[in-house]
Image 1 (cartoon, rainbow, N blue to C red):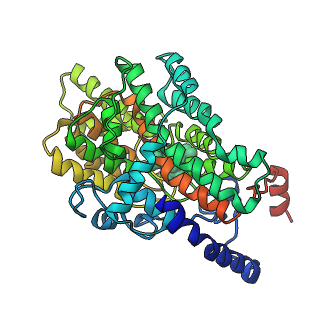
Image 2 (image 1 turned 180 degrees about the vertical axis):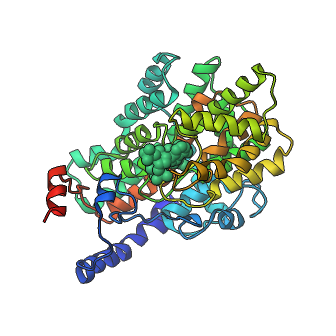
Image 3 (image 1 turned 30 degrees about the vertical axis):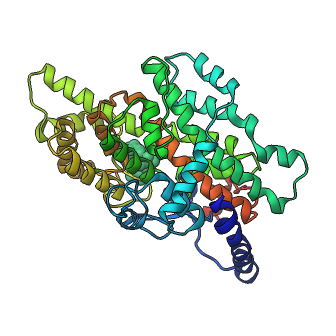
Length: 438
Ligand code: FCX
């Protein structure tokens, strides 16, 4: 209620006016040019998308509405109610990304209640998710579950009923909050079905993250804090990453937020993107198994040997490198700090730390990688593993729950600002040759 009526909708006219003025008065101002390299090479650094909610600097990393991760940790409401004492609540960051304002604890609590009230899954979705084969990848199950929830779309209904385009953002917001609310429900059903007894137990006296942990079957307050951190830092990474961009692209056709975010989840499920977090754990397990079988310790030398085996086999080191970042990802750093605080002696944390001490030099020596430093996926798995959450095939689902918050906050603004159908120009190789042979 607060997000919708008192803060968010009131901001729309001003922002519409500003973007319109930019387009009208400076529409022909050149902000870059495109090389053949960029055209063939996945459009790296081509500036062709507006993104309200966050910005990624190659050196500094992500800022959510202008705030770095440490700044978010310092100012956003926490579950304890004491700002700075513990991790920000997911609802805090949802509020920030949607409205660009730092919420009060009271505002955040109202959003928690709102999300809990919207969380009920339709019966047909429960039946469908329960019928899925246990050996189907959890991300595939999540995507099927979310697509099936599309029956609830108020945006699709309003469009079919002839809603004016000036109202699209109002209907989109209803769907956006519904998607954010139902994702943990679908995700918990999948986890409990695939690995346990299928029973999901809620506790809506808790916040979004705490309740999600109970539904997954965890009741350690320290794990709740990890989930809060995890969900906050994975929300948004500006617009060009594959999951956010896919959501934005699909949404630009006026597909509703359920369908648009399902598109984003499909992109997240790739190993060069969100699936890298499961790949990191697999890489570490393979490393441990190999050297344990050979009677060797896991240390800097054996990690170096294993890294070169991976690179010489023409495979990537999961969790390292980035299309934009050129320094250690601050999402890695804050997870490392969490580990130093909560699990300094954990065996796998120490393996990850040792990998960090040798991998940048290995990748520099390898000579191909633009960024030899770790990204977010390099650290997230070992934190979950510490709490007994060892089912690493599932890890990307947690990323998927979180990314909805950023990609869909932006989708609200896409509709509020009336951004058009996205349709860049492709060119043929022959046309490219014709340009250089002129
Ligand atoms: N290990 C080995 N080789 C790597 C590498 C890595 N970690 N990272 C990049 N390279 C290789 C590329 O494959 C490419 O090789 P090629 O010339 O033979 O095609 C070359 O180095 C140059 O790539 P680069 O410009 O550095 O990186 P890109 O922007 O093309 O790709 C990703 C960025 C993230 C895809 C790449 O670094 C990678 O594959 N990393 C491992 C997977 C991973 O961790 N993904 C998660 C990223 C992120 F945090 C997220 O979205 O979740």
